[in-house]
Image 1 (tube, each protein chain N blue to C red):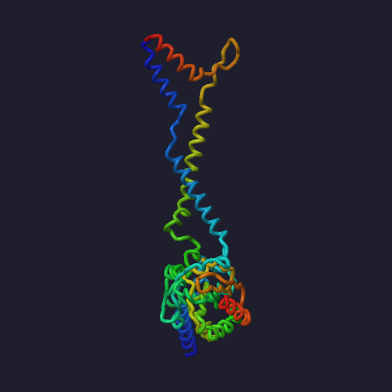
Image 2: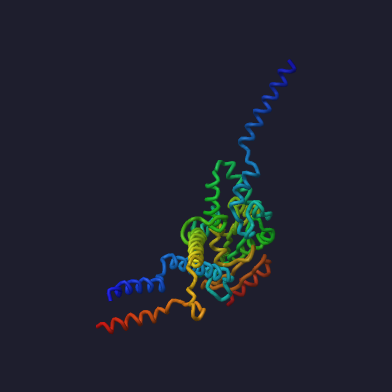
Length: 197
Length: 161
């Protein structure tokens, strides 16, 4: 009888051995694994995003225009500020050969259509600012232009290269996407179609 | 006289050569920074190895900024400000990027702890005494199951009440 309490103590100790308590670091490891899965999942979702489709709302972004290439009196603007106008959003770069061929087409288009509520908007993608300015001067470009700051605009439009042009109608919907350089006849027919719709 | 003129010309040559070498930005200087940057046009290729026109322009920009006296950090900051975090070979240590920096360290650390504990358990298992062999049956006599043991104590307690 006198040994009973000792046996009970032994029993409790053995029970504790059989059912070990989970250690704090086990939870930390699982939290780390969960964070890793979330991070990778987020990256995968982001990687699978595609270019905004025709008929969808054009993603908004902020831009600060190059000096001498402002839109009206605005030094900086959001794309949404241009709602009510047809926007020809052209991604280009000074290091891009086809952009040289397209530059004249776009400038002529700007001169021809600017009085019809059409705004031609150039975004210099992944470019050195001084090179972009040289390019615009060399090709006599006068339409509004801005650098793609932190590559925000090109990220949102998921461009696959330059040049790439998005036609955005007056209510901010993407009406047409042109990967690669535009020709004058293409530019005119697309704009005419948007204006007629 | 001829020897003195030779010495003078040699000194002048060394002086001019040293002065120009000190101010000159070499390709190595440019590449030391370029290898820490990635051009978004040619993904997964460091700027010092990329041969596209865009990358050549970026390297020229690095050279220009070095010539203007910018430090390595200032140039990297400039590129980050202009083109975003993705141009940096090493993600900046801020925001969600901390996961990238801390998770591998944490996993290695906790993996190490777990492995050490596993090894210790293996060692403890080896040093346990061998099971007692009953002389009658020749079978190892395992300790009685916990449930029976508890049941027996509970029975004894009940009998004593």
